[in-house]
Image (cartoon, rainbow, N blue to C red; front, side, top):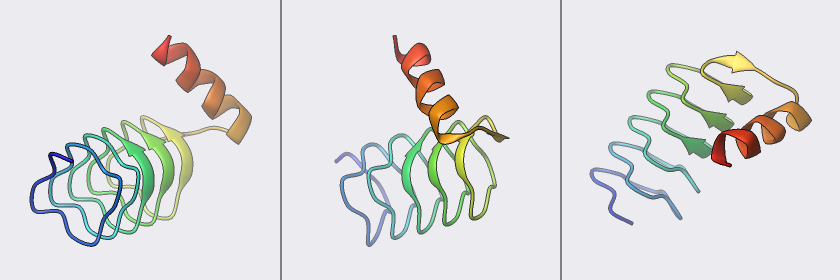
Length: 80
């Protein structure tokens, strides 16, 4: 929804220039990724927030790695 120049993607919101992504929000220029929030130029990433230029990473916040448990705890705190 509300995406621009985004192809092959599903369940994305306000993304621009993304390709083959799913469940991403407010991201731009990402490819083959899922569950990204406010990321840019990431490829093949999953569950990243506020990241730029990462490739094949998961559970990162502002380009810093976290364990799965830490990631979801931090996201919950940030959302709260």
